[in-house]
Length: 202
Picture 1 (tube, rainbow, N blue to C red):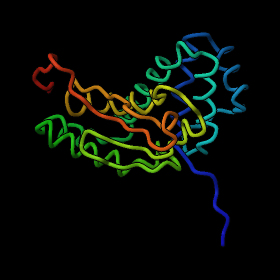
Picture 2 (picture 1 turned 180 degrees about the horizontal axis):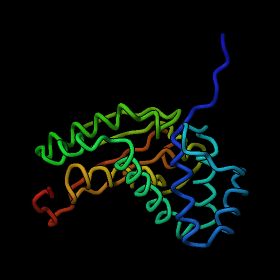
Picture 3 (picture 1 turned 30 degrees about the horizontal axis):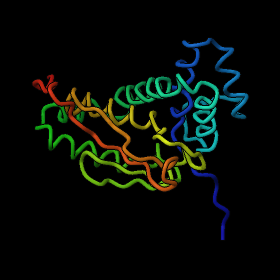
């Protein structure tokens, strides 16, 4: 049987964290976090990367900057979604999604997320529970960690930003359960914030 390589993930899992760390503490902080995570070279952005280094960078951010880690991961996730919108989802497809009824747009976007789950779930198992609920079993970003609260702010931010831009601006993403909490599954629920509904933007 041929040997299999490491599970892969998109390079933005690391690359979009870099400017966030630079803004907080300059190149010195970025270098320190990467060194502690054992990641000494940045990916080029041209190809997928092993999931291990990405997970270690996010884990080290949580360990070194526990109070700020959720906001940092959220900023990096939002930037990742903006990259996807700029470079990965064709503009005609975005134009169509923005003009569809929100429930239909949500289904189409959710299926697209499912079809590209290999780019952000790595060796985790992605399940499309519904058009507004996703699960990643044994999420490699937090595999082996133990917490009393969900940790996957990067994933939640990516999902939230895509839904806000392409489906409805009032969507939020709440991670209601996490592999770090239960040892099994991260669950992400897309919700429309009450009292903030307004017409969809053109």
